[in-house]
Length: 476
Image (cartoon, rainbow, N blue to C red; front, side, top):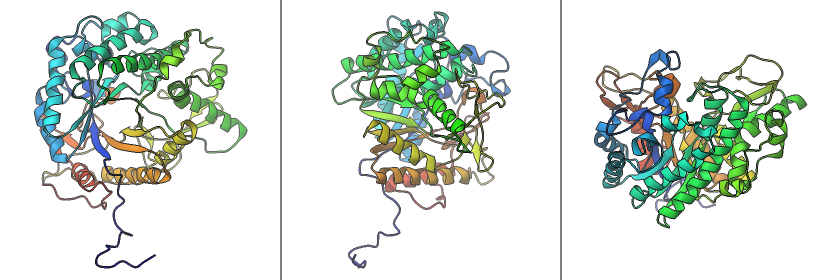
């Protein structure tokens, strides 16, 4: 090893660099940012109905205005450009594009997304479009929603409509966002829309989501140019137990099947885990899986979206009910929280677990290309007297998770991009406006946007394609 010279700079203490061409972005979802819920032909979604019920959302918050992105999108894209983003992940509102859940598209709805895509491209930002981020038309829910197999065909038709209008300009398409949340939070615990709590229905819904993804991939491939890429965004998590006993290890196995393998295995192996089927045999005979379904569900994707927030900790034995993690068919399996360490609404903060998760996917499923499609943290951000939003905790969170991501890439995991959750403070589902995840602060009374210190720091990351020091840069 030769010593550094003036013509060979010392790289030993240089910021960790990411691969050339690595994509940097931030994400939002339609229901969380757009507002304008009754504008231009949009009909109610399942989340409109759910949030209208008193007690379901913190403080009784509603998404009628959200952050008014439907009207302010040009200003928001200008802020994205200021941050230096080269990717923006957004979702399309199904009831805005197809108000009746079937039939022809609503031209005004598609016009909005066409304008948004054009604005992004004009600012050098690559659109990453998610077709389904939980807000299907209420009229489809009235017909059974995801518990009705017909919903899978409705989704494919909707995918075709959006692809026909935007496929010439959008290079990366995501079919579904976090189907685990739709299935388990929406149909097991019932704390998300549509608010159902039934074990057998949960498993049926999970399968229909897997099938809808496959049918959606087929619809997209038929409508998109050959250069377009297709993905899905899952939210897998490492599953751990505090005490290594045979009973607790079995709890880990069962939780892993219900959280991770129920979606990863059909997607990447074309089968459901045998132990999952055995564990839930007393609930269902899995007769909702028909011949050919799994061949459809495993339609090849170009990149796997991974949304990561926290690992899970479980144990065997009796314990208090957890409204967030209801383990279908697994009585005696309890979710627990570690005794120490920082935590958020999602759970314990553990950046190293991201590296563990990515290596596990590579080990179990092969070298599938990956993009981190969500990763972020909420904090009680305020605009200070100097006009700054000092969110040093988020900067530290990002620094740690990007370091773990860099380590995973060094390990050999094929990660091609990082998309932070979220671009802007928004309506955070059942938490309403109480949780601020954004790189950009929003004043709830005036809708004024202020880039936080984390946004300025993230701009440095993007500009260098590397992890800069923790000290937040000055605004400018």
